[in-house]
Length: 365
Ligand SMILES: NC(=O)c1ccc[n+]([C@@H]2O[C@H](COP(=O)([O-])OP(=O)(O)OC[C@H]3O[C@@H](n4cnc5c(N)ncnc54)[C@H](O)[C@@H]3O)[C@@H](O)[C@H]2O)c1
Ligand SMILES: [Zn+2]
Image (cartoon, rainbow, N blue to C red):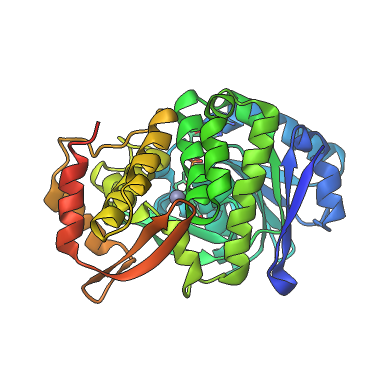
């Protein structure tokens, strides 16, 4: 059974379909949502995903009369750059994409963010469709934040551009390496930690099933994770306030990714450490100790890292945080858990305390 939910944004509302085998009927989803057969489509994907999942998608679409071209980027965070964006735009031009065309992001968060930003900027914005193929992308494919990185800061060049639909075929996840499975589950756990204590304990209880890609557990977990994301985005599309809660663990996490040069730590691993840091900060602010012990226990159960790698320099991590867009007027905006399933946006966290936490995070085991 395919599960469906809606991201409620008035005229820009869109559906998320989650289930096994969706791509076998990709043409009918496209037809149902009025994707043009006259204007060319550009499928953006990466090398790993192309090897496993591109061919059948092209075949289905071409047979149904869609005109497709594809653009394959190197796998990994380094493809979220202005240089690669320019190459994608070149492919849009060469394939003759017009105002009625759509860009299709077939891949994980890297491809989704890159292709989404290409769609947002090509001809000042054309339609795009998210086809997430990683677990992490249950987060990145929903909500319309699209971006590329600058060498000094992650996601700093971007836009808000909502997709037409999200087609989440859980069958594609079976080819995902184990490390990416676990890293993706980190964002799923985050959706529990910020919103829903019951879902958090469900994740903990179902850790083995989720890591083992049990289809039923996976579909339910992705559905719940997407539901939290959709609920938050529907209330605050442009991050005026509430949407910031999705950044739990990301202030420290993004800094770790930047210092690691975008390759030592996967995004989900970096924010796992960041969420343990946020929980430590919470306890320091006077909240109960169990917030930290529970948070750490869950991430360990999923085999995710909880410690800052000892070789990383604390000064450099703090400097990376200053470049981060969440650092406003000398005060740090920090998402702090106040219980499991609840967070607050604390706009008054001293950088000194965060520094202490980063140092302490090197001692975690
Ligand atoms: N826009 C947002 O709201 C948002 C939210 C969270 C994260 N992100 C971004 O998402 C990115 C991370 O996403 P990710 O973890 O999906 O990374 P990714 O896109 O790099 O995918 C991870 C790895 O898995 C491979 N892969 C993808 N699907 C596969 C499949 N089905 N089978 C085999 N291999 C496959 C990729 O080639 C890559 O090597 C980061 O850049 C992060 O900033 C964006
Ligand atoms: Zn994230």
